[in-house]
Length: 352
Ligand SMILES: Cc1cc2nc3c(=O)[nH]c(=O)nc-3n(C[C@H](O)[C@H](O)[C@H](O)COP(=O)(O)OP(=O)(O)OC[C@H]3O[C@@H](n4cnc5c(N)ncnc54)[C@H](O)[C@@H]3O)c2cc1C
Image (cartoon, rainbow, N blue to C red; front, side, top):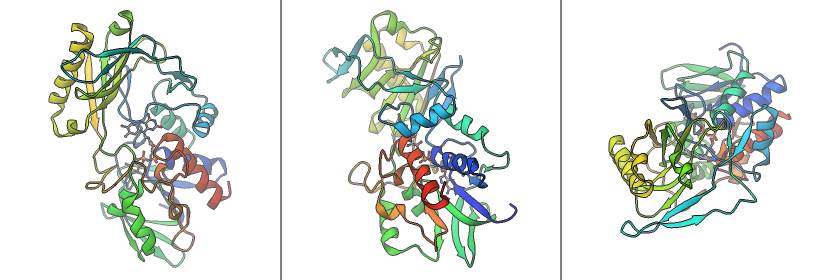
């Protein structure tokens, strides 16, 4: 890397949005991303027959104005989550499911045409070509007289004049060594900031035909009885590719993927019949890898310490900042929070 510059640690929605906001103001920045891909907790994969399938973030609503404005600005399209027809609620495995209709929502959930990853892909196109280094995991943050030197897991050192940490604070506290040490009150807070969706198991199924729609079902399922706890129709924007997505229960992470698939299909077969047993593909993701979690989170409540005041301040003499959805005072944990956190840092410290 050439002369000292602004370095953004983390290539998720917050880091990439921040780089985009800075680029619009002609401020050069470099994103260091630990994993081989961009997007972090946003991960859309293409199914076997090309259905965009969300392993991570999927839904947003009119309550998320900053995200909606960004989507508009980038020329992307949103569409409502399909919910027409009979929805199912399974209270106990030995009783038939309760059937209910979801009223047309005043505040519908939206999905992004093409998949949530479109947000990441479109933002990246607006950045200079050399703005991103993948496979670059930051492990040390050392203040020097007029800058910060970042050390990576593979032994590289990168010079910056300003650094913005755009990864979950809990992860930063476990993965990074700071010298000089960060102030004690911040050191105490960082490990107790809950990382939203760490440990979640999201699954997707791809089908040739939307058999549930033709039989009057919405595809929506809530269950206290099977491995699937929540499920939704996952048809694409064009209405030409079909599937489901949803969450699996807590214990699912300890099973092998084939076992999870088998249990998912058994549950759906019982609820929706034979056709459910023949998907084109099944994919899932257990969100416990090194890019989101380090050890077990010791957390008493969801969103604990999210948006904490100490995460709004600068450190290392005004050269080090925190962003990322968990730092946002509003909608922390969500994509909206990731966008807000990037906007706040851009405004507060880069005067954009
Ligand atoms: C299964 C699941 C479902 C979700 N559903 C929704 C939803 O429907 N709606 C919604 O609004 N939100 C949802 N979310 C939350 C949403 O995905 C996040 O709020 C948002 O994507 C967070 O963006 P971020 O940039 O703050 O963090 P992240 O996306 O976590 O980005 C952090 C990045 O930093 C990288 N990194 C980590 N450590 C280092 C290191 N040491 N050095 C360099 N890079 C590092 C990571 O690899 C990652 O790319 C969901 C999340 C998950 C996991």
